[in-house]
Structures are given as C-alpha cells and as structure tokens.
Image (cartoon, rainbow, N blue to C red; front, side):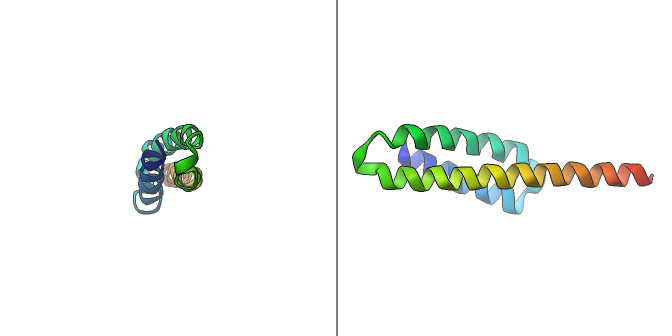
Length: 82
C-alpha cells in the first residue's frame, strides 16, 4: 500500500504540474493515494514510504484542484469577454 500511495502521489503531482486541464482526474488519483498512505502507515516496516506517499498525495491533490479551478476561471473569463 505504501508503494502504491507513493506512485499515485507522484502521478498526481505530475498531472497537476503539466496537465492542468486534467486536474479533476489528478485530484481523484491523489485522494486514492491519501487513503492508501493512511492504510500503509499500519505496517511498521514501510511507515516512512507510506508517509512520503501520503505527503506527495496531499500536495498533488491540492495542486491538481488549484489548477482545475484556475482552468475553469480562465474559460469563464474568456466566455465573459465574448
């Protein structure tokens, strides 16, 4: 679970940085990573990796949702000018 959380967190960050218009998908991936990170913390051997995945997932989720809102605001602004 810790490895999956870390991978999903990294994917969420990449989607948030490079693909802002897919922010909703990245947000969902980040939320799943957060859930897996919390579950992964139960295993003492992989607690560090689970924490890293948890943090990356939180950062990716916030970043994706901010980019998603920014894209919607841009489209709304362009529509208001037309």
